[in-house]
Image (tube, rainbow, N blue to C red; front, side, top):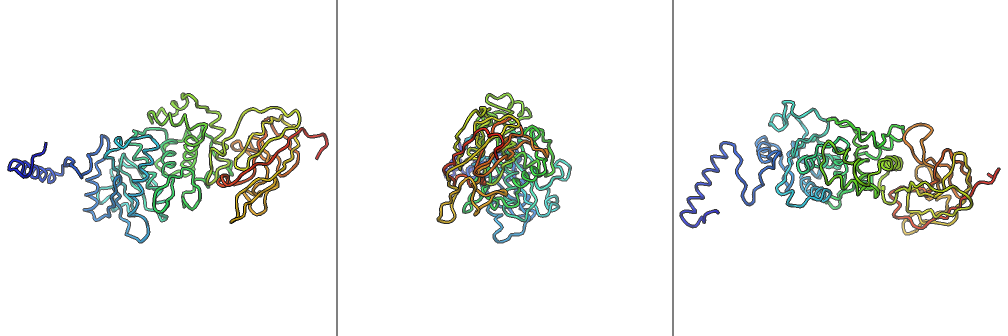
Amino acid sequence: MLGNAEDPRGRAKAGRRRAVARCLAAAGAAILPRPGRAAPPREGMVDVGPIEAAARRAGLVVHAGERLVLVTDRPPREGDGVPGLPGVFDEAFAAWCAHYGLADTAAHGWRACGMLMSDRDRFRAAGLLPADGSIPDFANGFCDRNRFWLDDQSNPAYRRHLLLHEGVHAFTFTLRRLAAPSWYTEGIAELLATHRLDEGRFVATPIPKRAGDVEQLGRIEVIRRLRAGAACPGLPEVFATPPSPRHDIPAYAASWAAVALLSLHPAHAPAFRALEAGPLDARLDERLAALAGWDAPRAERDFDAFTDEIDYGFDFARSAIDWSAGQPLAGRVRVAVAADRGWQSTGVACRRGEAVEFAAVGRAGVGRAGDTALESTAEGISLRWYRGRPVGRLLLAQWGAPAGGGRPRFGVLGEGSRGIVVAPDDGVLHAKLNAPPGSLPEHAGALELHLRPAVAGAR
């Protein structure tokens, strides 16, 4: 118990404590925490206090929050958002704790140091960027325990994302003892760092709703280009992603997509949550494969469907696909095709070469134009187009490998209000109304689709 400074014995004890503190400080030793001071570093973590002190001695700018000390040589610029980064980091930290189910007590006293660099040599000269080879040559950013470095970026949104990406590494390396395969390490950092600001406050957006919220990030565009070039990896290839200190953008994008699928898809999220509750070590892939409820073939197919349909505002719940086998078409079948869903099974299984006649009737809501509600028939509306077709246009497809190579996808066989489709392979017919995935919550109603075996010679 501390003595009372009002009595002589208390004053003497206080004087001795001050003297000891001065000696310890002169020797460069850490002073034990007291109320109002930061907690000591956790086991395996770097003490942020000496880094902050060295930065100030070197004339670097320090912005401090509850969870982050940000050191930078970036000259102050009006409206660049840099002074507010520690506050954004604090809000993101709370979201990371929620993702992993960590209580406040588990993160008590945790603090990181981030170094935002315009000139790496200035940080080396201050002793804040090791030049002894202990830190590899990195592109853009690198994390060591609860300290990390990142090169300054011209775009404020991407600078903020990169800071949070490295912050997630610091969080997982120290609070979760992360030693997992690269796909998870980088994928979870991308997922938990992706966000937008709402009146300056952090809002997690694992799947960005608009391109403007994640300027210069480009993960969705990268996946699209890989798909267009028949170079997009499947889930097993993503799981085999090798570690690299260089910024391999396609690998980052694919890892983000894999973790997004496993975290957010209703068929896979329960097993993935159970996985993340356990050790995040080098055996992560083995643990995933052994989990009850894990369906590897379905996950691989869902990943291919996601990367093919990927877009801003993608909603896994609205786009989850029924992969059940279906039944042969013996007569006329009537199916409702909802306007607010992605690909939907018709329940009709076709054999290769089988011809099916289709006709669609009715109208469905496909959003608004100002105050006007928009409705569409199976032909779609000419006012809005998506991926080369009118929004609201009925599409019929079958899942399979494309003729030009690449991962499996839905190949459109027929479209519009009526026609005949011929199955190129064995499989179920799926249908949807053409629309950007992010607009589906604004759509309503359904079209009525009629299917029957095609009459010989019909057109």
